[in-house]
Length: 222
Image (tube, rainbow, N blue to C red):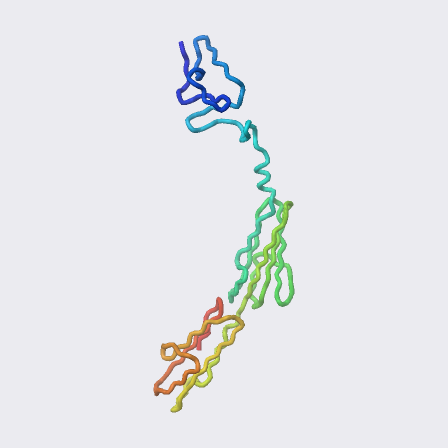
């Protein structure tokens, strides 16, 4: 009687699939064909069951441990570097990495530098620099985030014409805008674009509207 293994299974000996002559089968006496010693794996369809990842087998050690032996990752949210805003700013600082991780942060402004506690709201107008450092046993990382909280709207001045004025003379409205930061200004006369310094001679009732906005702010209307 001949006992046979499933047709899709076989033994790889020294990297070679066995031929029909030494396939996995048993004779009536129960003896298996002899094979030379070498690396072997049992193959089922496209899966290989083996041991280790080296050329001769054996475990590969240290890869997982090495991945964790790094400085922490530092994250700052609630504010971006170089931001100019008129809203309250609430920076939040966090770090991930191999414990223990310590975080030290400071906030510098025109009045000096002091320790900063993550999540503290900042509402006073000023230019700030937030510096945070996260440290663990494998190193330290630092982030520096400058930002400005600006609460002053642009100052718009109109000369050459006055609110409610009635005159029989030509009028030359001149508009000027003052602000510490770049502004966008729109000037409309009767709903149409108007250039500052243009003389108005036609008889009519006019409405001059000036809209000026600095970066990140709402407009100043006159």
